[in-house]
Length: 106
Image (cartoon, rainbow, N blue to C red):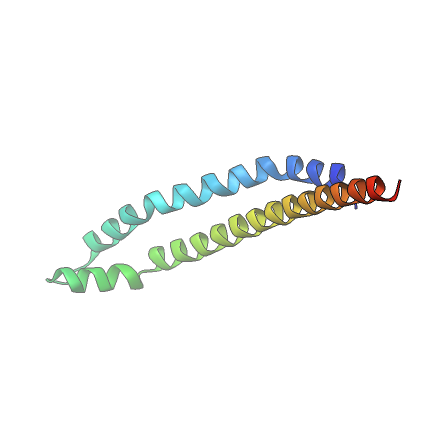
């Protein structure tokens, strides 16, 4: 187990993680605008009809696909970072245990 390698791996993916977070945040922020734009294109007289048309529109479906992909990338990177942090914590715990065992056996 090499904690330095794990820490370097975290550092290496921070920019990618930040970009994934930015992309996800951006997509979350434009969701209402896409819905509103698609609702404005609808010829349905009721709000619920316009909303139904918006949700079934090609633009909204494409948005949902992009959002799901951004969520997948963000979650994957977040879990990778958390896993690497756990490995570093495990190393620290093992090192502390080994130090205690050395004290006891002296």
